[in-house]
Amino acid sequence: MMYRAFRTTRTATLSVAILATLVVGCGKTGSTSGDESQDPAMSETDSLMEMEATMTPDTTTVPTDTTNIMTDSQMTNDEAANFYQISTRYGDMVIRLYDETPLHRDNFRKLVEEGYYDGTTFHRVIDGFMIQGGDGNSKDDDPYNDGQGGPGYTVEAEFNPDLFHKKGALAAARQGDQVNPQRRSSGSQFYIVHGTPLTTEELGQMVTQLQERDPAFSVTPEAAKAYTESGGTPFLDGQYTVFGELVEGFDVLDAIAATETPRKLGEQTSPALTDRPAEDVTMTIRPLPEFAAQ
Image (tube, rainbow, N blue to C red; front, side, top):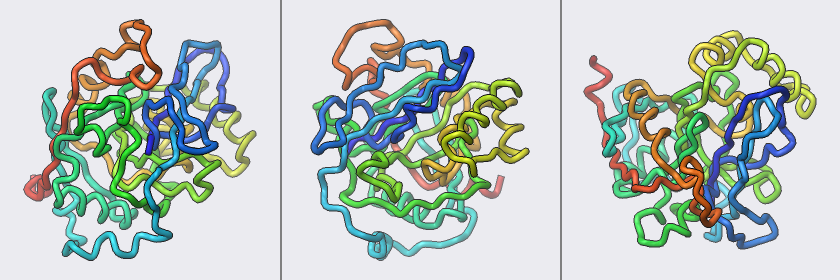
């Protein structure tokens, strides 16, 4: 299964026509059904915010619900259980899971408990947009299947207008609307928003154009403050489930986002590898309950 994220570029107007699916199909060229996936061009254009994301459909059997995915673990709602450390060669990041998204929270806990994420990589990195990882396929020696894997199930969407794509937001990748109209999340692949700050004018233009495709779209004052001061990807709000946030290690996020990729180096390569770091950024994830006491 491929999970991809959107990229933003700044100039004059907002391009939202290409808003498709985010991170479920990060960086693949192949497709296993009619929803063809290929690496987006993501070239600089005369647009305020260019959003591109493609993914290939999951080839695994997907259950209709996630009732059984948490039965092997004894979950707790204690705040201390929501903190996790993601360790990479660039350093450590600390994330906090949201209790407002219990399905995603408990699924993430379960996968960490099983060691699923250990040895996976951030296989798709776009500076100013996001870093994406969590695919079990990234543990093997075939870079072309990164973004196509997962645990064999999806998770029901848990959209919440109070949880938005600010810098450091932790969100779930998914397949596109054409094959996934319920916008169910990947069972494992996630991304952390990098983003860049927007001016008030840029954010206003973006909101206006997003409302043309969805009149109900809005940005809360809290979100607007975050987008203009720290950055983020507001065009993903209501499209992908945000289920946590980075609370420490923003310097590590910046370092990973800045890592060299063929796109960043201007190299011609297979679309499947365009945003893949030249040197693997491998991760391990462990619970960090002691962080809550700090």
